[in-house]
Image 1 (spheres, rainbow, N blue to C red):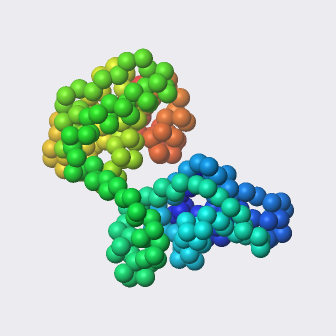
Image 2 (cartoon, rainbow, N blue to C red):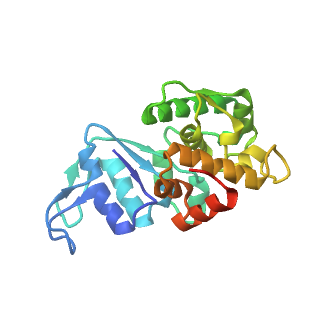
Image 3 (spheres, helix red, strand yellow):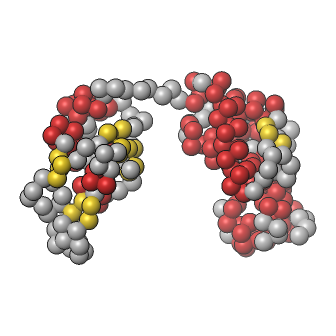
Length: 250
């Protein structure tokens, strides 16, 4: 069972983690199990643990130490046997020194810690990761073969991935969707990856890149302009204007 601790408000997060009794709050019309009950004899993954409110951190610490918790609105503790895995992009030790994270919880969680370096510090992993993401997306959209051109991989390795794995995955999925051949090439990459983040680098100017991108998306949607506008993240009126401006057929 997995939950993002930074994506929910305090009250909702508490209910999702520990569950609640009917009548515990407005709208609680029935008993609900929380993730710690659902994950009994299994694993619960707490993503973005550094975003968890301090009072919920105290309740999490109690679960880790006593293997029991209280549902919202309940007075009888519930036993649970779970393995807890937590992840964060923050330094919890530093957060603890300024009072944003409980030091006792930090020590409890850091019994076995794995530090994952940012993607920019391990460019040797990029080609393998990109190929894995490309295969996954190809299967999803029904493409039988997929490969990465050497220049495509080179562009990926030169980029500073501020968004780490998520950013790489999104870039690869976009390239696979837009490609009309098995081989992924640099022209399928976002403009900043093609140019190394500068407008003067690369083979294509911005207008040419935009023209080609719109053509790729229209080809992918078989000319369905509303769907193309959605994928491009622009309004349908804007898409029609750009089609007319660039003289794009179809």
